[in-house]
Image (cartoon, rainbow, N blue to C red; front, top):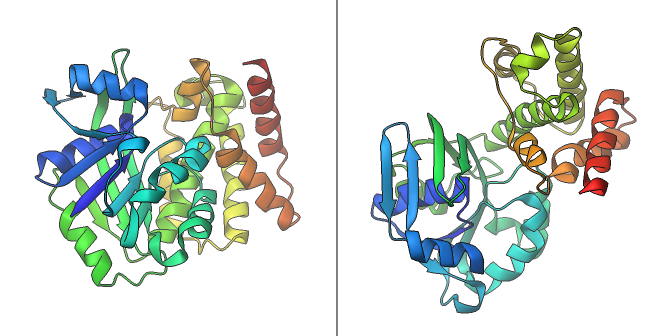
Length: 304
């Protein structure tokens, strides 16, 4: 299977590297700066098991040739419009597109551009970041990759995707209910991002502060009410596990949005929090805590 990995940051770099190491034909679509960095130093993975370096196949938008069987999109959500332009020449009659982005708005955006039958569901769970020299740093052993048809019909096209991905040295989950997985990932990451960005700290600091647990539970409840109104068929055991994970004061957690904010980078405010507020408004739901988070993030973006 010919695979195009759109992005070689922490997510795309890690999972793309594992696919390449498993023998898949993987090309990384990257910008000029990342292209030069990877050409010079290779794609470096720093994992709990050690350091690995591989020489990746690289392409820039101007040098893409031929169609790909699978395009995995791993950029930040605010870069999606440009990436859609970049990958368009690589999309052929049989191409499937699997976005691994935060939130859910990107699915409709990709479907409108490339067609509903081309876009499949995908998400990952990994604690990873880029180091100062562009190395991919996997901070914990967690490295799960979920995928499946958005309508649950994992036909022969999806079976081929599974055959390519399942032996790539990561924990793969071929899901027949990927939409619920996506809703639950959004519930986790938006709660985590909201409380960390608002409080400017990790969950351990928040939960051991006066009113911190009440804040976290309140944000969680608002988000759960929104996604349920939008179509999420609540799985009580799953949502209870998410809340339990977030509420453990012994385990300090932060979100990628919080880490980007503390470094002065652009953040996915509209895609992670703003979109929830738009959906809440559609159902006349009161979300005062999410509104406070959104104002906080907007002010941050104005001040950058």
